[in-house]
Length: 247
Image 1: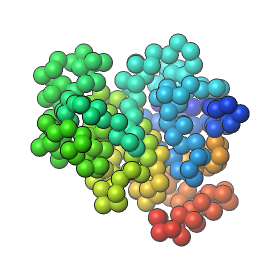
Image 2: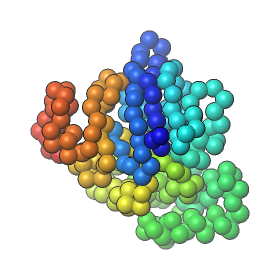
Image 3: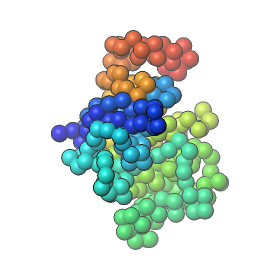
Image 4: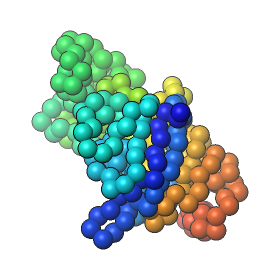
């Protein structure tokens, strides 16, 4: 059994079917990049995996446990599956280290001292130890996003969902965030990335999934998807990316 299993996943908003029967299996330690045009369903798929959206059909299982449908312990799920958003979502009234400490203290029952020690160690890892006492509005966008990633991994999740985490950043700040993701991949973190950073997806992914209008149109290793895609729509999408100088 795969670590994460998605079977016939459907999501509907009103009369609009956003996800149209997604089937996907992901092994532990794999990095999966979700690519496709805006509106293809990438973010919605991630939000379903973390129960931020209720599903309208199908099933999601993580490590053998069904985590979709009524009766799911959402707090337990979110301890297993962390998520980082494009808009950072840091608490503006808390310092950097307090942002990171909050989850482990409230949800994992860690002492304040243990949570602070972990927060400072993680901040040192991402070269932000000297910013522990700062507040989010005193940081650059790239620094805020690094803090958001650290806050997610402080919960020691088994999988991490990254939703367009560089799209709100100035181009010169993108690399500092992607370097953190690259390090996490090398450490074996299971990750889903919804991304427009095609070259990065090509470098870091074990599997690339191309979504088109709510359907999983094609999936495979990056060398196949980027080098020899089988679906005409995938080829068209990548041709446009190449012409735009983004691959």
